[in-house]
Amino acid sequence: MPTILVVDDHLGMRRSLSIMLQAAGHVAVEASDGVAALELVRKKPFDLVITDLRMPGLGGIDLLRTFRDEKRLIPVLVITAFGSIASAVEAMRLGAMDYITKPFQEDDLLQRIKGAILTQQHMLKTSEGSEETMSPVVPGLVYASPEMKAALIKIERIARSDISVLIGGETGTGKTQLARLIHAKSARNGGPFLGINCANLSETLLESELFGHVKGSFTGANETRIGLLETANRGTVLLDEIDTLSLATQAKLLQVLNDGELRAIGSNKSKPINIRVICASNRDIPRLVRAGEFRSDLYFRICGVSLTVPPLRERPEEIEPLLDVFFARYAKKYGKSGLRLSPAAKEIVMGYGYPGNIRQLENFAEQMALFCDQDGEIDIAALPEELLYPKATESYDDVDLQGSRVMTRSEDEKAALEAALRRYPRLEDAARSLRISRTTLWRKMRQYDLNPRARK
Image (cartoon, rainbow, N blue to C red):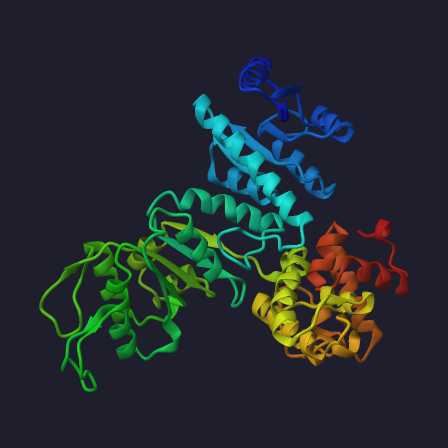
């Protein structure tokens, strides 16, 4: 019998929820606000927390933030009468499993409760086992960070519809994996999933790949070809680097999406198509729209809902689970077993900034598997040179310590530390901005006699 903590400052709502939960076979415990909830959670385990967002004192958002800071792996379902997207997304970013707005149907709430508890059980099972912590649908998709957990919850809802999706994020962050997950969880999963990188082809070849062509329609068109959009009928199409399309190709794509009909190059006949389009980009498309480099009408057509995948340096919780996935893959390829990092190597690997994100981490993992000793321990000697001596040309948005590990003056390092500590109140955030581990940050602070309590 799952034990569920109900947190709401409204007595009638608490009692109603408790009665509903007990009738469904759960054990319900009540708390009148976030402070009382924290006291209970610190004393005994709960299978789920259901909390209101707006409460006097410690509200739902602050409660979630405290759970995250204390590393409490408790599934949280947020109930609120203030159904703004901003508050719901913030709640999920902080680790909430799901949210529901008042008024709600009892069956809907109970179904969400069941889903949240089952999801938590699955995550605990995979994190304790020898396999990777990842989505069971798309191999290699790790969801150890609050940001990725929030994205997966959002995907559950996105997949139920045919709404268009625009996925943003740096190169190598896993945008294609999320697109595959949306397709796999949708009603279209029996149809094809096809993707194309729009930056890899010239304008003429790209149009031919997308729309198809008839024989003789242009020089080199020696035979009729069916395009990607028609091939993916009743399935999903991923258009990666959509921002590289020319304005002319954008106009043609918009017409296809609006009309649901496709005309191959050189043909005078249109064919009906039924596809879901997911687009991805590593650039700020709204800025391109303002600059006149991307059609606003196409942007609004492809951005039914947006997802942003944070860079790997902002979700360091996923480096180790990802390495487990990659080590398992390359151990088999290179005939090694028990691949593992030595403590010294681990500190370097965890402290690197990964400007190439997951793709770069996988490349490093393969090199480590190739050059490590036969017993499987990966020491500093087996690390890629770029991990040991990062290029000075690597650039990040924030102050970067790890990207310039080889410094000529200790004053530069101390200044970078002081700048990050002034900017970020929490040491964890300061360490992330510097692209180093929290352990390394503490060591550097002791080295330069920087007292965190004295920061202003």
